[in-house]
Length: 445
Image 1 (cartoon, rainbow, N blue to C red):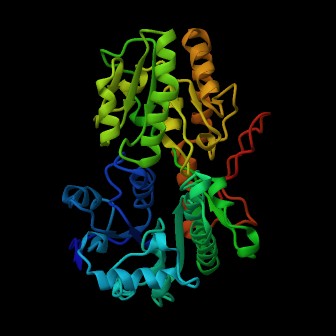
Image 2 (cartoon, rainbow, N blue to C red):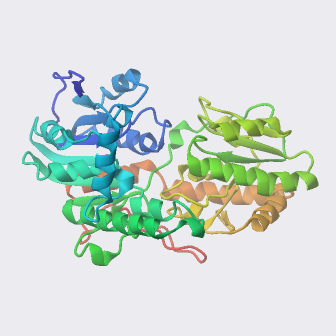
């Protein structure tokens, strides 16, 4: 069930901490998924000073080239068999579901079959050395870390939820007719369990202030929750454009196999693109993102719609679109795709959910609208005004550059990991000026 990379000759960093990190996915390459967008820069940074050991739940299909790329940052990379890719009998599944249905167990959404050995394996992995910190990324398999605790060879245990499981569950379905007693019970269990994790761990981290506030403070007395956003990789930006995307154009950027993005792109096509195309016959819709699902691929059949699929470099496509629209109605966390579009000086129209964690000023850095009429009205105005597009794009670039640069974010993250950050002593915090029309940006810790 466990395989080791065999990197026994990797030197320890005597001046730093020994950190063991558990990942539900391989954090490479940079744009592979949300975890790699967040953690590949973090690994690069931490490896300069600290000794890192990685434990990864093996993906399917296996990606050995990714393990090779991570070796230059880590002393050791181990792979755990991911039980989600194994076959399980009906009795095993029923046993798991019945157990997780109980009110004192974690929520059913975190149930995983065939994991009875996982607490022992976690204890074995973290017992190979004396670690200053164990860092657990995401909520997948997190109940098994709880079962394995206390870990005698680990100094501090930190969980980076990234997105709040409770907020994801709350927004899982907006259809009120489906939000029945079972869903309410599952949401209650998720909030209760997330609060328990916050209480038991030495530190917890979230990607946005909205995520960090989902569990009431009364559930976690005396426990501080850190907020560390993602940064934008400014170094990768290029000014090139692609041929074939004619103006006027609207676009959407994101992983096109992810359910909230599929929902948003479909809504954008139906509610904005088709009605506007009657008034702007030459309008094109450009959907940029890897692994497009079948509903997205079908949109290519319509005149004026481009589905790029996976591209090596997103920037030439982003630069070629007049404005971006992100009608996000579900999901949680910080939307890197919006930050990237803003950094490319593209005007962005989104929903309140899309602006969560970004907290840009609507009307200056971004446009926040609540319905299809608002999206269509602002899109038509911006398409007819290159000057307005240019002005908003310049403000958007400045906003992202000032608030989402990786170096100060990485320093703040490292201070949490090393124990140098505390609620009582502000450490490397950034406070963008509060402006009318937006919530104040929370600090990095």
